[in-house]
Structure formats: C-alpha cells, structure tokens
Length: 127
Image (tube, rainbow, N blue to C red; front, side, top):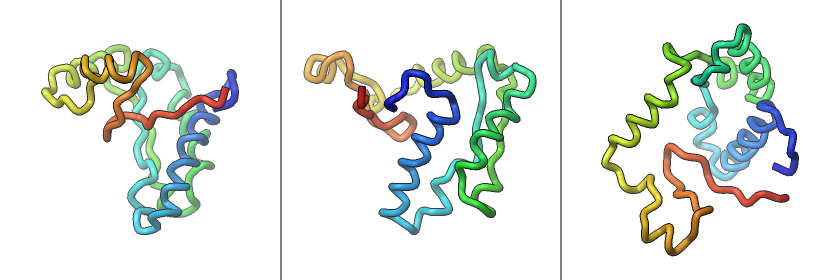
C-alpha cells in the first residue's frame, strides 16, 4: 500500500478504490458490488464502540445515497472463535480451487496466492 502504518480506514480505502475502478469498466454492476455487510470477528470485535468506529470509517468511502446507506456492521456471535470456526468450515470443504497444491507450490513458490471468489486479489507491494 506504500505505507508501513496504514490503519483500517486506509486499507479499506485502498480496496474500495479498486472496486470503483472495476465498476468504471462495468457500470452495470454499480449496485451489486459495493459492500453492504461488514462482519467483524476476533477479540478486537468485542471492544466497546468498535463496530461503530468501523462504520464511521467506511461510510464516507461509499457512494452517497441508497447504495452506501445499506452498509451494516455486525459482530459475530462468537467473536473470539469466529475465525477458527470459519477456517474449520473451509478446511472441511472439498473444493481444490482455493488451495495451493504441491504442484503450484513447486512451480510458483511460497509467496503465491491462489485467486478465488472468497479471497483477495494478489497485489505486488510498491515497497
């Protein structure tokens, strides 16, 4: 991202800027590809006021009007174990298109990330 001290707001802005660029290429997706739900998990999600802070940082980055107004920030019922439950569920899934196989590892190395619908796109760091 070009900064060693980027906070949540800066990271979200970086991602949403990419979403916006993609929408300029495909204007018919403008109402379907803006985030409407942010799901918080992990121990930090239990901090008082944390969901409100996330909402406050994200809302100005979204389009004005109904598209941005649908933003909701919710906290997992089990924030301390939510990530573990999600990883467990993913590990039990038989989909092979989301994993780095031995062949891919040998071909691409340890830094390779498989791009798939539930993951982030791979970016080369500007640093």
